[in-house]
Image 1 (cartoon, rainbow, N blue to C red):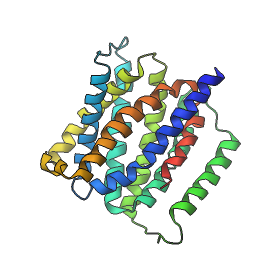
Image 2 (tube, rainbow, N blue to C red):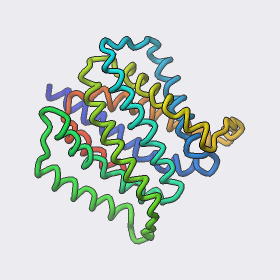
Image 3 (tube, rainbow, N blue to C red):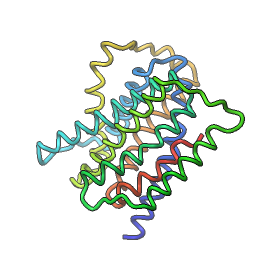
Length: 257
């Protein structure tokens, strides 16, 4: 059991280190793509990759579980990344990184309220405060001027809050005992369904000619294949061996530049 928990921490650490670089990739892509375009292309790509890796349909045993998957898709895929991507339009990546790093705090509060066996401990609070302070000092170094943007900063905070909802729902999903790839793909599917209305009202176009630029192609592949398909699977795969508040403390590293 200890080896399994250690492996879970290692996979979580690798996952959030990759996720920490997505702020930069998204910022680069925003030069050519709108926030909704990045979001949609990224997760369509992730869904296709996961289907090719494991082309077996998930058979949900309890229809009530579909609501959990739908909630996870709405909060962790559609809303979180839409808030984050739009926030990056208005605020520097360092701001967004630090603010979204508050997600573990929101996660801890929700986990204590809705998950059995989760408790908010003093060491978590102390560690969280110290970690946030360290991240802020690294992100806002002497060469970086702090820029306050109310809209961008608020959207980043909203992203952190919705990610906390996804964290709690993911913990629930991990208890269902389904294959991690199938569970992740099912969540992606709901996330994409909830994106469809946004495609109609936001600035979206296919514009595949933009992928002729190697920078755009590389960053989109990184977000779709690495940060979405691979990272979401590894995160969910080892989610059930570690306490929610403990494993999400690791996600503070997300904000490191």
